[in-house]
Image 1: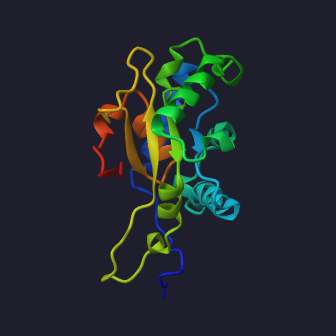
Image 2: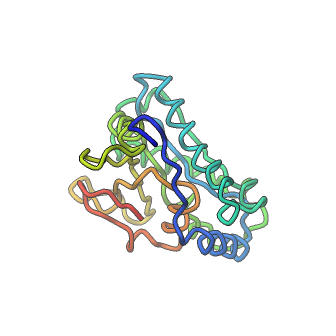
Length: 214
């Protein structure tokens, strides 16, 4: 029997195969081969903790392989790329500062090398529309052992990251928070990437302090 310190085997969401097919069809339509979120590290208190978070992210993808019906197809797995920026200048950075860094990355037009065969509107891809931010609070939420499943009488916390949406013609307003939200850490690869593609932000957005679960 699992205890609070033992990870529970959880079958992926029942919609996963449909999401795989949808992502595959979308990438084929756009002529794209690379997918996956850009991630900004904004806490440097512990390198060990950061490595644990990255390991949990990779474990999500490995877990899919343990359920053959949900395993990523080879070309989708080969195309999955997390671009992780670990600049100490971003230690304690604000969401606005991170979004500015993301804008700078977009200004380099990375899709020209990542998607050489694509002749479609590149911003339809979540990779070039939304970035993820992990600060100390979100890191701790991800590593909280209660996320692994505890007793029924325990409060269950939710591991989360910040999702920031860049709109070229609409700079972020510090007094409005529609351009960012907290999303669950679970299923960051295919589930959240699929949900937030094709302008899905409007369907999934949750106002702080709520956490979008997808």
